[in-house]
Amino acid sequence: MTETTEDRKKRLHYQSHHRGQVENDLLLGRFARRHLDRLEGERLDAYENLLAEADVDIWAWVTGMQPLPARHDNEVFALLRAEAEGKS
Image (cartoon, rainbow, N blue to C red):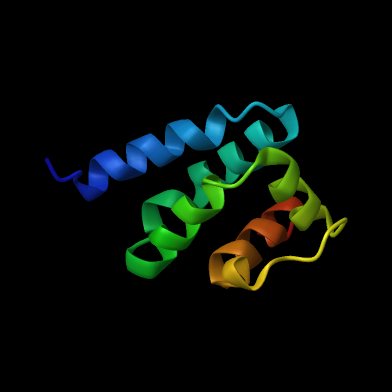
C-alpha cells in the first residue's frame, strides 16, 4: 500500500516530536509545527532523509560542532538551522 502525503506528514510530525534526545524533540518538533505542512516533493524527501539520521549527528550539524554532510546541505536544513537560531 502506498502512503498518502497526508499520512506521511503525520508520521514525520510524530517522528519529529519523539526522537530520543530532548533537544531534538524540541527543535524538530517546533520545526515540524511551523514548516512541515508546507514541505512538498524534494523538500519533504530531504526532511524525511534528515530524520533518518542519528540524533547526535543532527544536533552536531545544527550546532556546527560537526560539518554538515553534502547530502543534507539543502533548503530544508537551512530552514532548520534558522529555526535553531530563532530566525525562522
